[in-house]
Length: 171
Image (cartoon, rainbow, N blue to C red; front, side, top):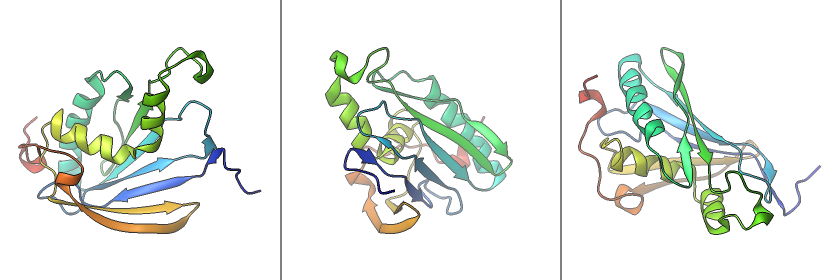
């Protein structure tokens, strides 16, 4: 059965090396299919990489989960193994309301259509002060088919960049 125009299909965005100085630590944001008019489901981010920088990243992800943006939040990071961590974006724009109840529709739409990858990278640089790669590569797949590969200069995603290198962060 094909989804109607009021549905958002399954999609993933893979970001292979977003952190400055570490080429083998990346993540994938995974969107599940859902109806456009229902609350946005949590968007899990799955991180994979070497044990040592991944443990330091997990500490930085905890900082993000403790920050309190008004329209979204991050869950606590969970280490699934020494080389895999999961973390999720949670929409809060309609917390306690239905979309038809006069919720902040503009915030809901922004959270729904702006890729979580951009929100995450912004929070890494601005909240956790992590230094990101100068160029961010992304691979987008929908319904298990590759649909786009591109690279963006970091300045097109977030300014300013953070100053803390992930491999130099002390815990």
